[in-house]
Length: 215
Image (cartoon, rainbow, N blue to C red; front, side, top):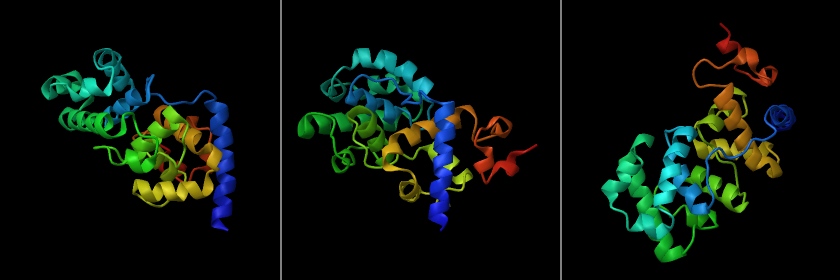
């Protein structure tokens, strides 16, 4: 019964957000699967706007996996420094590109292979597979998707894996990719982590948390 109610609620949420954000798409700029992989790794704890500014220069300097593989790690760290956590990100990018260059010869097209890349968890894998290859195996749960799903009462879980499982039960499979984009757009523009703009929210009537943020 609860699942059926949540499926009905989900249809309303999707319809409202599609009207509000008809052009919702991946906000990271990329031309190749490798570029999207690198950009997604850089996006951890960083805004997409900042990442796009960094990758505009980065992708002119590093064009292939081998370019990252052969990069001086200190130089790569400096190139991505403004995205934060640059030491770990540089190591993950270089190690992933080594694996791509030596084992796969391209950015993998399966979840199991994607998860062998250093620094790549399900969220990053879903983003790359869905947006670069059109392969949708689940729902990418980033900070926006997690926050909004919890506020809307679509899940009571806290971990990305359990949130994803809950959402896959109620979001139509054909909407898995667009659902992530829609919640990301709404999270950036309206449902902020701090001080959400509930008075401007088009889905507030379906939100269990709306009364918590009314001043």
